[in-house]
Picture 1 (cartoon, one colour):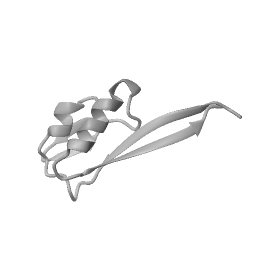
Picture 2 (cartoon, one colour):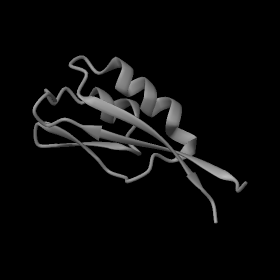
Picture 3 (tube, rainbow, N blue to C red):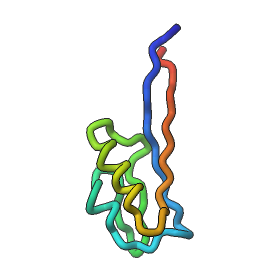
Length: 75
């Protein structure tokens, strides 16, 4: 059995996002406010900011951030 790599990705739903900027304030390494919408800046959330990213998703006032956990085998 190979080693597994844990990975976190996030997505912002543009139909729900109200552009408040809370996510960018809490985790600017992952989120950026572009105009009046938050956007994800990275494909994979860096491990060192995972907690801040998860907190931003949890505190989003309109629940516009979806968090996905992936486990991939390392070859």
